Length: 528
Image (tube, rainbow, N blue to C red; front, side, top):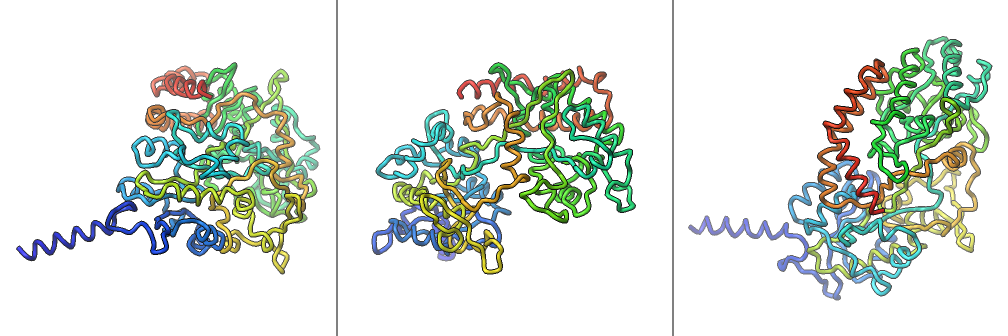
């Protein structure tokens, strides 16, 4: 009997050691009155542990908290998050950029009572910095507020020089000159250029038949060539929802005649060996290995930015036009004016701070995180320590400090001083300026200038938060619907026979609840 009691006592003691904060068996204050809290942070491999980051230690010293940090690597964070949420043994708070807690996660677990509604703490007394940001950034409060009125997570965003495009199209101008062609301006002219590239043969002069006229990485938001569809006058919002809006009405793009026209064009290219046969099978590493090379092998490439493609080529200089230059959106048949996919930078796209509903120290945690929303603190968390990594030039202007060897400090090097890349911060548009920024004709800013006039004016706003019911129903419909679209997209492009199969394709989309899918997103859009 004594042995049984001993085992039961040991088991009970072990169980209490895993109880989250708020347990009566664990002290919640230090001898000097500071609140003891557990925070789980997410950071990259090779970055300084949060407990050792200089700026976080300074902020902690100014706060009423004593923090017990647990760091998760980005590699294992999703698995660890699921285990933690399912166990119910939550820390006082979760911290860090890209912490895999999406708005859908917030809705689900917030509705289940795991996360604290921060609304009562967001005021000028407890959170003056973040309250000021909410007042200054249009749409931010709505973006982080659930349909039932709670704020379960706080955002991270650097709004300086945000890109406005996803994928771009770049063309090898040296090959253009060799085949005697001008920069294409219509979809038919692009076809003629690609045919000329193929007919010319060994354009890179390496004696190998390794050239491909056109390449892209299917289903990649930045390299997937989704925006090329704009020659039809329509584009989808992105690869995740695949929606468009017309006269305020939500449309599922893969079931439109415009998508059919887009597929027919790509099938024409594929059937004439103008489109890379590996477009549907390459992973990111393989795609980069093919497109970012000293010796070009592709004529036209879908890319995030031209400088990514030109960087490996001899003579690279971002201030000058490179070998690969941007192709402006191409007109369609009968002079149809093109559109391009606008890159959405949702105000709630990166949730960086969540508080457990079980914590006894909500106010102290909110005061602590608000210090990180101070403008200068946020700037340093994103760009580096003033005086070491960046120089204060006065009047909210800054410049970059390089190392003694002329190279930039790496994220890992900066992470000893500030929670660079992974820390909570918010920088509003025009708040700061870097005066040493190089004027580039190849980067994303340059791409914005090329594609900006063509960005679709109507699109589904992905920052509108779903209800729990909408989120759950979409999680049931979306996988099968999108998988079928991907399967048939690849088949239509590589095998053709589009007209003959189109009606059956549309019927199958309806069986997979495409109509309900649109109905749900229309309801979400109507709340916007």
